[in-house]
Each structure stands twice: as structure tokens, then as C-alpha cells.
Image (cartoon, rainbow, N blue to C red; front, side):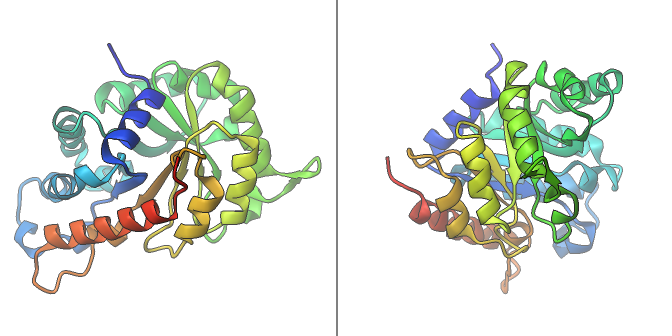
Length: 274
């Protein structure tokens, strides 16, 4: 029986005692020297990070473009299979930000949930509910809401009938998309005030919170703004700060674990206790 996205995530929170998510964004310009000539460097690099940090996380989030740009989709398949088989309590989120008309979305859904076996997929909500239904029929959907990049406010903060667009998106997902399947929202740690507003609109949805590492988001304020009273509710995502942590001795695996452990401890200290 396939585990639902929300049940899988609840299992990940409970088993790991963590709301940390490690993003798997392999950059060939930053691979450690020992992997430069490897036949499958994206897989080898990311799988080493997975094994070093799996007990500290509730989720892993491979970023599709980082693999596709290297013609490494088969390495991504292999990585996703390893996560599912070797770490069954960890939630697998494919970060691909898909979004298209229903007929095309059906094929994107097959790619994410069939080919890669993701528990959840990041989705662009701009096309509305009908375009999200093919994804929701197959697995969890995490809709972009208030993102962590510098230009996010250009559209996401626009006034739409007295409320910013990002809150209209949160309302749409919480009220309508949840009638078709299991959802979450992306809201960056670079905007904790907006994150708090989103939590008010969507009190029961998991929030994927990027930006706590290299982008300089406020971890403590974000946890305070978005965590549920039981000390859960968030998927706090860090990528570069873990993958490419400073390793003076050249041991990138140990360095990534130290960085993940530090974030894990910070998140746990900031979270409310049930």
C-alpha cells in the first residue's frame, strides 16, 4: 500500500525528531576532487550526503534541474530509489516546480511519481486548480506560495482584492486543492512575517521553508512563525550550506553531517514542545 504524503511526512517527523530537509542540488563545479572523473558523480555525491545525514532529516529534496542539466536523470532515478529503499521513513520531495495544462500535467505527474517515486512534488500554482488535479491524483503537491528569492514580491505581494497574491494562493490551496489531494506550501525563511500570515490561512498544511542556509533566512523566526503547537508542521530546507560545507580536511561527508547536525539542533531548539 502506498503511504500518503502527509502520513509519510508525519512518520519522518516522528522517526527523526527533526524538521530538517536537505536539498540535493549537485553542482559539477563544486564536486569534491575525488569525484571529478567518476562515471556517475551526481549520484555518488548525493548518495554520500544522504548516508551522512539521513538520521537527521525528515525529508530529502532532489532538485531536478541540477540533474537534468548534466544529463543525469538516470542518476536521479537511482538516487530516488536508494532513498526510498534504504531510508523508508524519510520523505522524498522532487523539486521540479511543474505546472501546465491538465493533459501535459498528467505526464509530468507520471514523471515525478512514477519514474522517480516521489512522495511530493513542488508545483507552480499559476494555472489554477484544474492544472493541479493530475498531480494531486498521484501524490503530494507543494505549491509555490511566498518564495525565498529577492524578486519574490514583484508578483507575490501584489494586492488582489485587499490581500496579497501569496495569501490568495494559500487560500486556494487550503480551500480547493485539498479537496482533490494532499498539499503543502512553499514559503521562504527570508520572509518570516509573511510565513506567519500563511500559517494563519493554512493552519493544517505542511510548509516547505527554503532559505535557512546560504540564502540567509531567519531560522528562529521562521520556526516560531510556522511550527504547529506539537513542534512539527515545517520542512526546513537547506541545500548549499550542507552540501558544500567547509571541509578543511577534504572530508566533505563529515563536513555535511556537521552542518546538518548544527541546523537540526537549531531547529529543534526553536520549535515549541508538545
